[in-house]
Amino acid sequence: MDFLRLLAEFRTPVLDTIFQLVTYLAQETLVVVIICWLYWCQNKKFAYTLGFTYFFSGLFVQGLKLTFRIPRPWILDPEFQPVASAVPAATGYSFPSGHTQSGTALFSTLGFHTQKKPWRSIFFFLMVLVGFSRMYLGVHTPKDVVTAMSITLVISYLMYYVLSDTICESRKVPVFTFSLLLCCILLFIYTVYLYVTGTADPDMSEDALIACGAGLGFALGYFLERRYINFVLPQTAKGKAQRFGIGLISVILLKILFKYTLQMNLVGHIISYILLILWIIAGYPACFSYVQSKRAR
Image (cartoon, rainbow, N blue to C red; front, side):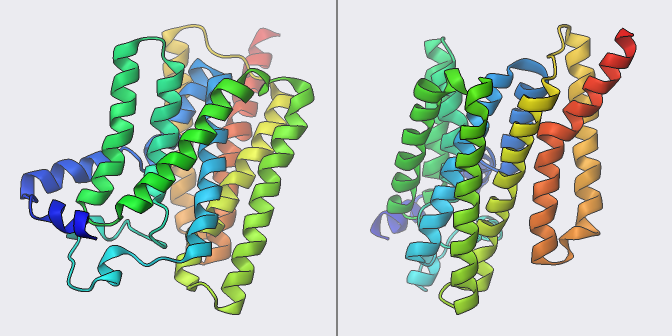
């Protein structure tokens, strides 16, 4: 808390805006858009590596949040005031930082992947900057940020340097699928238990349940794509632009549809995440693969 109070002394409206923009770099929307581009148009294996890194680390962090149940800084110290614009997105418990996990999963994986040192430096700088932004905004302590970053870096390193070469191999598909499904199921059971017994605040449990739904959708989509779809990447800039544009429009339309149907309660919210990620990973690829096969005849 002392470090957060120190940072608060240097706040200005301009810096508040800058670091609020920085923290948006770790929002799930940006991560999903990048995964969509890589997956549909650029590099399926790398997209899978990033996806598994993101979901494995996210599930792990959500499990720790529910286990330790540490309140946000302004709840620990009522006299401390965070930047007001950052509070609405600061859901769930404080430790570890979910935004830092998200940003670290994205930028560390991009950093490991690139062969150009300047870009690698930029990606890892952005990773650290996202974590710092959470402290500047007053929504996380250094312990929250460092723990999330450390856990995610380890998972990112293992996924990229140890496991990524086998992630598209047919014989490894059941292993990756089962591993992620098992993590989702275990966290779901754990969260429901804490939810039902009142050990964890119901409002604080929603992020973990939604993460389970999204992870489940990714695991099922990965299995279906690798076993039955095996779509081909577009070879031209025009083909990439068309596939990406149509795909994003379909995702936006689904989000709007789910907002006014399924997302009226928590169960529907979870189902909507399962279906949305499943559409991104398997549904939409199945559609454009079918269209391509029809044209080839």
